[in-house]
Image 1 (cartoon, rainbow, N blue to C red):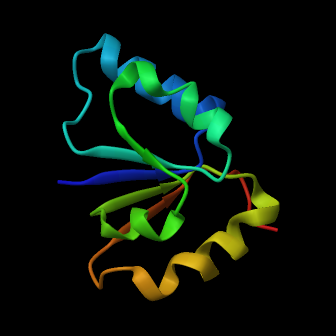
Image 2: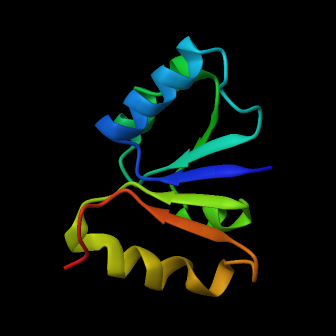
Length: 96
């Protein structure tokens, strides 16, 4: 199963740290973020990273880990690349 995060900020780092500490970090996990500095902070997890959010659509489960004001634009960006059976999970408390 492929898992991808769109957004590579604080909450993703916390999730990855927890999975790594529990020795449960999936083998096929990736994080996409437009901010290369955010991705650099995730290098210690030895995961695939990139800046093209559409690549996340290749995953089976996609976590939206972006701020509420940009969720709609991120969804617009990836909608043409999603698989029919993709599962999308939003980590945002609301969509505005």
